[in-house]
Image (tube, rainbow, N blue to C red; front, top):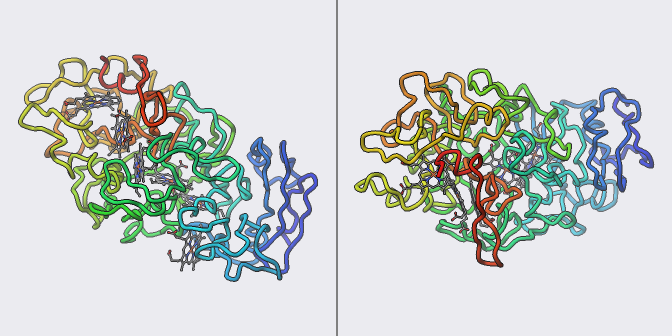
Length: 481
Ligand code: HEC
Ligand code: HEC
Ligand code: HEC
Ligand code: HEC
Ligand code: HEC
Ligand code: HEC
């Protein structure tokens, strides 16, 4: 068979199974996988993780040599169910474990191939492809022939490094045990989202979530349809995250106005650029918030950068016509954090004083000390923020702005144009805004509370203190105090 000849790893036996989608895999304990003469295998594979890696001889390659190309997530072509499900937990007369994704001996919940005994453990399936030590970590997946972007890797990113060396969602490394993939931190104390946690109420939330894993936020099957009523095309994020409770139902804007849209340079499963050249600080494939180098001009950088839609954040929004930011999506679970859900967060009678940090407030591009006028208090001072910092990949994310026909993830320093000075967070909603992902990774990261810089310190379990922050990091980039 055409694809029957695979890269042959030392000590690895290649064997086609009677059942097309089951093939043999062996683990290699360490070191670099050396490719066996297929020019097609990218150098990335040879840079396989330093860990013990189980390189599965992919059934996809065997199967799809003769059949139509199928996708792991819906998008380009039909979905390959057998990537993740096994009907009888048996293939070729033996239990599906351990031949594929580390399947559970007695069969897994929802017929999954992974070692998943409850829905709180679904990430143990996802991580087989999305973690560097998963059994399919280095496999190329059709139809785009890409390696799954890593959300778990032993990377060494710190806040001195640029944001193109860590996945845009961050890295679950400090939340998940490297061997068992069980959660390691206590509820709401740790480095970000504690997937695997049970019976946990999100801080600021209204409902306890019985089982918390990747699929509370992402739909595993995905969508190819921008107008899908249940799934956002951007990252397959669920319109109603599982367990979100009240104030749930956020469909991102689906129209054509660029600055309201959530956009990734990868283009998602159905896009034209599939990543693979972006590596984290440990040389694993990731999808960071930008690729390559930035100039500081959003128009030229937009092709290399994600951008986060701006908007007014109405409380309920399932039509795709409303302008909703990621803050509003996060606040489905963290309800009280958002000023649109909890208006008392803002005290408009007293000069816009707030009770909680704004998560949907305008960021004028000009913001020297004292620049704000009229009803606006002078809060912002970006004296430490400049193009060199953007080019160094250290600018924090903000939402997009109507001033640009094409946006990037950061706040530009450019002060031309009519709206550079605006601070209107009430009526407009069309400008750069501070939002959850300004300060937090969506997944987790090296620092407590999933923060993008080292801000909180652990004093002892259950109580956190704070670290001093230098003038070129975090809060100081906007406030200079
Ligand atoms: C990327 C892995 C993956 C692929 C590929 C996949 N599934 Fe699933 N499927 C899941 C997971 C994970 C769940 C459990 C959902 C949850 O926990 O919310 C699931 C759940 C289901 C369910 C139960 C109902 C539900 O949606 O929760 C059905 C039915 C299903 N899948 C059918 C299919 C079919 C049919 C295909 C192929 C067309 C397919 N799946 C492909 C991962 C996958
Ligand atoms: C499906 C519900 C859900 C959604 C959606 C959600 N979260 Fe959470 N979040 C939780 C739960 C549950 C916890 C508490 C458990 C834990 O420690 O992770 C939590 C905890 C957190 C923490 C504290 C983590 C720690 O270790 O102290 C941060 C920060 C956070 N979320 C940010 C966000 C951001 C930013 C978004 C949007 C990208 C978001 N959340 C979306 C459920 C959710
Ligand atoms: C609390 C909700 C939440 C959970 C839980 C979650 N994600 Fe995400 N994920 C997001 C959001 C929001 C983004 C977009 C982040 C951005 O662009 O800044 C994202 C981005 C991604 C991306 C693309 C960007 C990247 O960093 O590679 C992948 C792949 C991904 N998630 C996979 C997973 C997997 C696999 C799991 C479980 C191991 C998981 N996610 C758990 C919300 C979540
Ligand atoms: C068999 C391997 C495999 C498994 C299992 C798998 N993924 Fe993926 N995933 C991929 C690949 C490959 C991509 C890159 C896009 C593509 O070509 O499908 C991807 C992309 C993604 C993205 C980015 C999509 C976008 O449009 O930005 C998300 C989010 C994601 N996966 C979440 C999950 C979650 C959640 C699970 C577990 C339910 C999971 N994946 C299980 C291989 C896998
Ligand atoms: C201006 C930066 C900033 C923004 C914007 C921001 N956060 Fe935070 N967040 C922090 C910091 C700093 C902490 C650490 C605890 C503290 O300062 O009280 C934190 C802590 C948290 C916690 C943990 C609270 C706890 O009880 O331990 C959660 C959950 C959280 N943020 C979620 C969110 C969500 C969801 C959004 C958007 C709706 C958001 N944050 C927006 C900076 C921010
Ligand atoms: C991306 C820029 C940005 C970053 C980073 C940022 N803030 Fe802010 N902050 C703002 C904006 C914008 C406002 C004003 C909101 C308004 O007027 O509606 C604000 C307001 C404030 C206020 C005034 C609230 C009030 O009652 O008027 C405080 C205090 C504050 N921020 C502290 C912090 C701290 C501490 C950090 C770091 C953990 C931080 N900010 C990070 C943009 C930022």
